[in-house]
Image 1: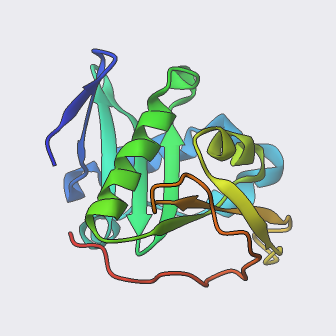
Image 2 (image 1 turned 135 degrees about the vertical axis):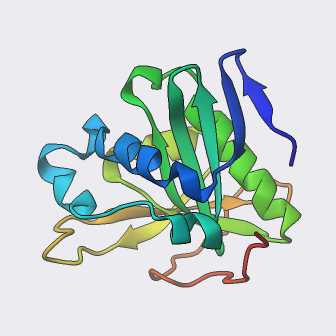
Length: 174
């Protein structure tokens, strides 16, 4: 995949093991995960092993990473955009690029278990809600929207309910 410059400010390319600490910092700096939602990130880090095992794209700006997205099997696992970059279209561009990777790997859909406030964003960029993932106390005490991106070309998701963990689980080529 060829790196892309977004709005003349960001180059999107594959993350490397050397990006682990800066992506962890970006993730933990997110204001979306303060207060009620903070527990989900407690002790969580993007590790070099995670970056080697999964397809992770990073948007690099003049001052370092401004966002990243991760595809694990057939799931958009992580999507973070720096607070100061929110609303610039960078998140939508990262989603489009990660869906391109999924298509290149023969996937027909990509699942997202969304941070509740982010569900509307995913719907705006083409995902369809298919269910709800129940809480998993003690870290996750809230239900999370489950959405899917259909990659079959028609832009609509299957009209069905799923349970967490179901779906196409083919390995993504690294």
